[in-house]
Image (cartoon, rainbow, N blue to C red; front, top):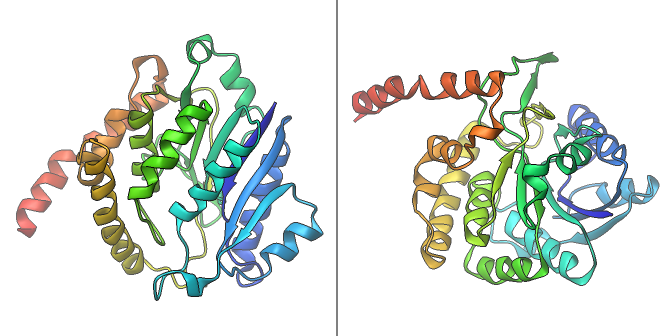
Length: 289
């Protein structure tokens, strides 16, 4: 069994903290007892190619010069996906994975998926983990804290489905930060495949990046997210998918990934914490208006 793992690394040598996080990520993936091939698309990111060569990382490596992106843009997950799908179609892989590079992946994640009959009865599916367990300022947060963000999507899909996705993203643009988890949840509906949240079987530790060093503050993230929301709405409309993927926030996404069979005590507590804040958020919006 071989797995194509799509991600992108931050520049190396600019932030000791980010370098350590990425090193932990790479090691955790390589500790999985499967043949892993990385699909890495970079955007003139310092020292990444040198790191990959020095550590003999098995990967497809593509570098897109920043001058080929719109002015002021740093990277594009859409371009990453274009390369990843092409590599998936040109080779034989059992799984196609998208993840961020700031997580620790359990070494047993695929064995947990494969031992679950309700998952493997499906020829095609998507497995994900929500919520992450956040490591912030060196401290592990509660396992039931409902953080925003789904940082790993494990797809078991046919080449026919991959070609369908390849055609669909011709009508999608994405640059810099935001919309990825919304997009990949919508892809499951596009491909008509079931979603399984495997949180109760295996958990993901998520590290908070050093955003200051790479100049990605909260204001930049919000601006980037809003711009990508416009592109995403066009994608949803073109593919006859609900606009709520772009406008319903995580309240909609968590409903889309909800399955009774996936529930555990901790996940029930997480959902309760998340949705118990809805009245407060609704009141806050009214006050702001």
